[in-house]
Image: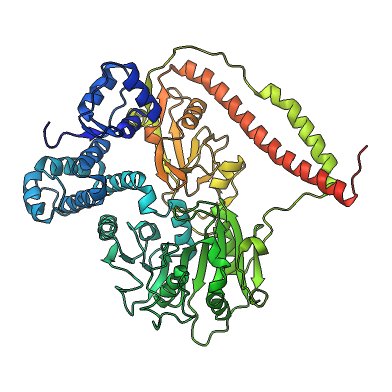
Length: 628
């Protein structure tokens, strides 16, 4: 075997063929001509990518392997998975040099970079050529983003990167765009990238991750500085004060430096207890933000109530440093087994009067609620449901428990007086369900030929657009938000007009960028709204691709994405669609539409049923209802 021949495992084959791993296992058992392993181990065999591609073609299961996917497999073949971060970093270095000197050929670039190749990497001029070829075709930024996405997906349990939705929320709350932004636990740079800061500073204890963060930021055009080291023990930016600090620190680190840092001047609000490393990170971040500047930091939910940390929490409240606690959904960040919080802190300005209230928000999966609540709190406007202010004096009791669920009612329970109305509504909806649900017939042994959405995009049958990271300020343009898509309602957001906004047209397909939160793709019934953040728009040529057929296929291919913790970032180009004539697509589209209407109706009925049961039980208990 040649030293640069690419090998793939069963999981890689499943991703390339857009099937589950069980299908690959089944192919190995059913087909005698399936390629034999050429490496790996008995429990995780490796196969030749060329032989696998040949087999997929012979059996009409071939999905075109994108050049970046082929490059990714070559990078994986260049080392073991433990050193894969170094291989990804080397690819980024090649892409940086290529952008600086686009006319440099691969052999010259290989000779120039050979002395810098990390130990354990099998790098050749051919691999450098493959990297530069993808860089020219995709663009250096898109190429490296694609490589990093695959790396994060493979090592999601070890890297623990902040999901993009949460990172974007932290950037918007911190108002980081165009400012000096610091992340003292930056990982591979996700928070700094999403910040759109004018100058970005980062520190990361893992050398490989720090190298990746620096390369990513430089490729994206950031004026950046990323240092390697332990921020608590060996601060790389002593005396530096940023405009905003964003941070998703490691949780529950008992060896964070309690003994050697006992007299550190950063502990302005009290020595963090040995088991409260997160409170050390909070104070480190406050020490690195200018007076009046914001800190937005991810915290484990238990940090709001652990008895050991009550003195530090109390001092943060008394000084007016802690401004908001926003509870997210369970697993919203990979490091959290429960529901993490966002703490928003402001470094007090000398002589300023401490505030008397703190904001508490029970956002769950509704990140838009978190942002809207913070903006309303900041501007002194009425707060949306699910958030409230709490007087600081009421929090300064013996426990200083800042758990949001103890202070904010998550759901308003329906009163018993609504029981009759809810019952009638539930009965009417139950009777209408039978008319919505379509009839389908079973077909045996039918496996249609497939195309990918990427192939249709290249053929001009679809156009794929994404909503902006941040919309202009208040205006009159309606904005379709992620929650509007989830609830199937009319646009509720508002934006001012600006270049680059994506306008929604009738029959466009809109899908969430991050799946797994309940939002589903939908066909738009009206034109005129602006596409909001975290949404994708897919516009079809109606003579070649039916939009309702496309929505059904996207639902079926919901796993075609890049995993981000407990969610998936949708990669629409990987979604597969059966190759059907347009008339047949429309027939299927009608049925897909009926199934999705049935899903919406049952979801609404479930909510009504929950409220109906609660109203009935409460009414029977308090005497406002009685059995007939």
